[in-house]
Image 1: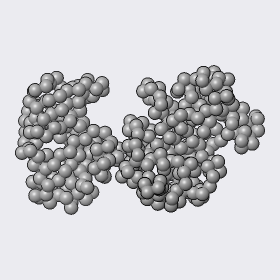
Image 2: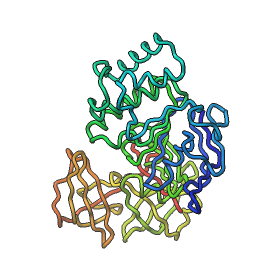
Image 3: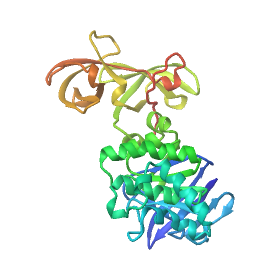
Image 4: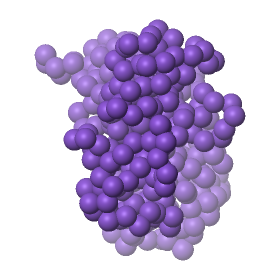
Length: 366
């Protein structure tokens, strides 16, 4: 539905995007995730026609729109700032793109009623933007962008100006509306929780390049680059020596690593699993768990910090001057104190283990 081919954008000598290519299928919700300055908003603006690519092509429904004016691309666009007309009521704001497309009065009225009902704002139809809450303004901006049934919806940090509770509620509404209308959606955000909850796929960007494209589960549990692993969520970098290697499946081998004198079982690509190799793995904090009895696979450390974070409790555990971060569900958290010695064990990555439904991350090298 949307395809970008080798998109480059230069601002003077600065390359804001560097050879960006991607596809978004019809009906998908795809999010571009990355830090400030990664080029994600520049990509969105070029798709919308608000920036002109230095090179490359943009296709919507197999039509090359690279040089087409923004108003001729028939794209719905929602900004962080809402961009509502302050001198128009809610009804008039939603009607604006329909009137400009010569819809009949009866069709406009029917469409407005349908959209206001969808977002629960029938009682605000005659209100002006200054009479609305932030969440209400964003819902009006959303349905206005969808009023003329665009084939593509672009969202530029649409919820970042709202407080946490409103943002959480609107995420649910946004996903429901997107699915109900079946509109292909591309969103830009720096909010990882937002990206994971809403997206069918996520595009991770850094310094103008695409680091990885995948489902939320793939991005989190099978990162392909060090940047993706470190940028998305919390991670522990563990370096060890391969002591033993045996065949597994999917091009992987099950290995035993020597980490600070203890043994860790993990999975490595065949080319990395040679005995004697020094390798690094990224392990999510929830992949560790505390054990009451030591075994050859347990790690001994000392608790140096405990942080209660609501649904999880985060422990910092000193393993011979190597600090590991361990997350436990707070309702089942261990009642350790700072200074206590603890044993840790590591869950094997079930993403490659058909005998368990647990998920964990997989080793990569770069």
